[in-house]
Image (cartoon, rainbow, N blue to C red; front, side):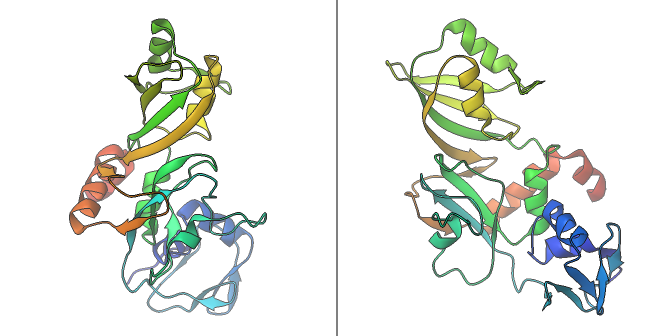
Length: 250
């Protein structure tokens, strides 16, 4: 196999997303044939070189895993937590192989979370340039006016930058109404901040769809493996949404 950038190798081996892999390299935690490599852009041959991270020899994943999890409330979307809160990894009982969360859901948010050891797909899904739509059900503490709804759809100035156009549909008219929200970007706590900008607080937030993948009947804490057809649909959606990946496929 020809030489590849180390961050790509680490990502493909399921160590971390490519962005996190760059940080691991810069921290001097990677060796190639016994030599510490701490510069981005360095290359190696996965099949020929002995590549280690924190002293552990890397091996290509035996098989790629793709999992859909219904993340419960009060659960952290990380591999470990210094505060000893429950993490999503503790819910994957019986999974043979190490996987990593694709992006995050806030501690008090629930719903669909994807996990995989396919570093390339994970990196593409969380990239700011890949506009994969994500759909949420959101309960807030009071209805929006028609004008506020239109402002939400057009984009709001959050932290000095206007959000991209978003989908918003009233699902249940009540004192504390439910809305369906559709985003193509994923800023930290974006939905909560958008409603807060309009004077409303989010009481419940549940993600029900990521691109072509639906949460479906999964209950909080349950997970399932994606079908081959679902994986193919997700990969196609990523290629359509990412100009960089479109160019690579030519």
